[in-house]
Length: 322
Image (cartoon, rainbow, N blue to C red):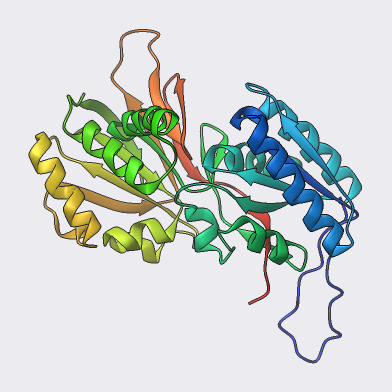
């Protein structure tokens, strides 16, 4: 892929030529239903036509999103095309991971509930506005995290948070996607039974045992700032943040939820948070066991150890002019 030309800060130097893709390649998760697919197709084709651009739309069948994204990323990088993920957190994660591996330029058309990644980078969260901004956007390097070699844009976690993600998706499949539904699912999860994790954590040259209900690792400054955690100042600037909750009961957990909503989670004595570059976590499990891991809204089971780190190179993200 021809390297994108980025704007120089030297006013005396000749103006850099804006990077323009040879074409646009959109990857969409086709599991959302035929009606949604047709609406998305019409929206993308209409936006391309209005901008006088050419492109291709790949709808990934259920279970094939990663393979479709990988193929599209490889072809985009080889031909100087822009690779664009269209959808919620899980779809954007799969396409971003493929783009990062192939060194392709990545764009975003968000269709999720919270859209933390788009919001923190100044990308419009309404799809038509995001598309309009996309065609004048320029590639800029942005930090991403990795967990066991897989890229994450927003967060990755063990323990209670993966349970919350699973419950939230189950509620959304029955009741639809909204912030109210997500809040109801979170309350139901917090009031249920919580398994406690026994971990060995290696970070900053030290190894220590930890008991916690959840380990949350974030690459998104906005998430940390909204709940009042000081690590937001370091996240996206060469480090990622970790949050661990000491084991507590359901009602105290609800109190933490309220603190977070008020932006005061950092004041709680049951919360430990810190920033880091690389951390190795070994859960206590039966021989051959796997641990439940969530990243950007997707839940998988992985063999330990679980390695969280800042990715060794940035993702080239298409950002609108500011």
